[in-house]
Amino acid sequence: MSWFSFHFPDFALSFLSIIFEGIPFLVLGSLASGAVEAFVPRETITRMIPKNFAASIVVSALLGLVLPMCECASVVVIRRLIRKGLPLPCAITYMMAAPIVSPIVALSTYVAFRGQNPLVMTSMRMLLGFLLAIGIGMLVRDIPAEKLLQPSMIDALPNKRRTGLSMAVAGDDSAPDLVDEGVRGKLFRTIQSATADFLDVTFFFVIGAAIASTFNTAVNQALLVPLATKPGRSVVTMMVLAFALALCSSTNAFIAASFQMFPPSAKLAFMLFGPVFDTKLFFMYGAVFRRWFVMSLGIGLFIVIALVCTHLGLILDL
Amino acid sequence: MTSLFNRWLPGVTLLVWSAVLLFFYFTGRIASYLQPSFRVNVLLAGLAMLLMACCFLFLPAVANCCDEERCGHPLGRRKLGRFVTFLVLILPLAAAAMVSPNNYSADVVNRRGIVTNLDGLARRNGNRVPAPQTASTDNPSEPALPSKDGSTPAPTAASTDTSDADQYLPKSKDGNIVVQVIDLLYAAQDTSMRADFSGKTVETIGQLMPDDSHNASGNRFKLMRMFMYCCAADAKPIATLVEAPSLPSQAEMSWVKVVGKVEFPIEGGRVIPILKATSVQQVEPPEDTMLY
Image (tube, rainbow over all chains, first blue to last red; front, side, top):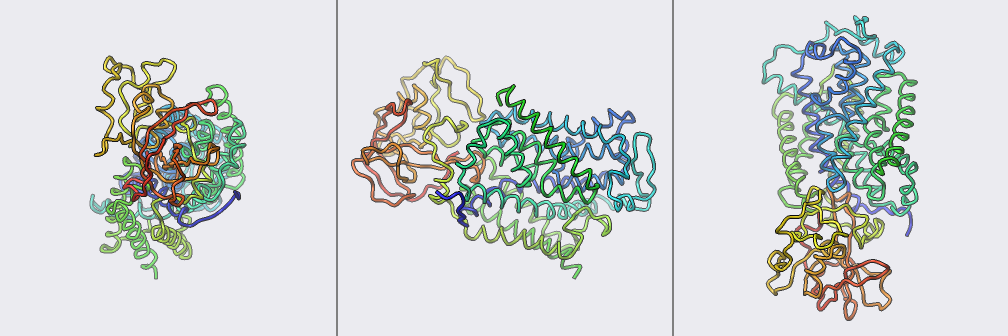
């Protein structure tokens, strides 16, 4: 049997099933993002963040529980949140945590792993995602915003000032925030904003689903067996796949669960790394952050997640 | 031109997506793509997108959440990006919806590898026959069958009664016990289920596949079904062996109904189910082509 044989009807069946499974979560996430845009004033954001740095990072890592966003939307949202006064370390922490520590992701992970220790996989994913985000938030504390953000980002944010915790950007008073447009107007704006997010994110989701379906139907999966058997190798393989497939965080658990031959630790690595660093995020991060930071973030996350998941696999027999 | 990119293309995109989702839901074709608990999500998403599309088509909505200079949508900043987005969102979906079958080809089945025992398959309790309450409690060395959420049910007083198996096993009008392929794989690992099925006449349907590995006598074939956890993308082919007086004439991947008696011999160091067929008939594909 050849290693690759593409048959479009088989591809179409797999492709549509991933689309049908994931798109409701994308619609839900986009509507949530639109609602934040339309209904949450910047004062609310700044009030939610404690003055103490450590507490502010922890709160930011948990913000995804009330402002759930998939990874694409979170990149979009932090730009808006920074403009609304969120300190940069908090924004980065939120950007890292929201695609994992969110009720939508928890629900989708639990559902996807039914029959495969759903409670363990969901709680491990939430906990490790939470700790990773906090770690990154702590690390960027002392790095000036000018070294992290793209110059165009800095330039686009007038009235920047230090807020006491770190370099943050005050709300741009000249920028329109929430005008008094009534509930009907806000709902209308929610749909407009949700549609913009939906189209943008679904573009990458379609490409990811197409790559995943090609892999699922055209590649002889017996070739992966040698890669799936060794703990360290299986974790790294799944992380590379997560980077290449660029799946949405709200749906990638379903893909992870379908890789039957891989151990849970490798699936966990797939679900931790993909939502915070993949092909599409590499480009999207580059629109906000300087290249050195994006590269360092990717390499650092890869090493840490690979080591943690490999050791968890060995210690907990995952 | 701005109106085209900001209003009409997003509106049309949402409308096409909504139409595809609702079409698959209302025609029942969704059954071949998703397991039941996900299907209602498709309906809700289709309706939500229809509502969003109406806002663009009938109200002056524009998909322009950011101001031009600070837009966080990488594809939305340029007209070319918006046009490419439109093409990528519409063309693959439309093409896939037009040609997508309800079953995988034999090529995909072989590439995924047919599972003939449950060792590599996470256990679920979807559309298989109701698990007997007696599961394994008479044999401490074997685990009880898990419930739908994957947890293992605790033994109960009632669960020790094995005498009325015929009451919970569904029967055809011919009096045969109706089973799914996966039930026989479960039974191979469970003493009490084996007792329920062993030596009894059962009938089941599946797709015919040749058997190359257990077929010294040349009269065995595999009866295969796709087993999905969530969606067709994660579906795994599972099969039980069928032994017939002669190999059936139907083509590979044909849907057949097999009637016969179940036996559980030990081959290759483990218990396997073999259906000794008395009849093999070609049938129409079932409504749910996949097991879950």
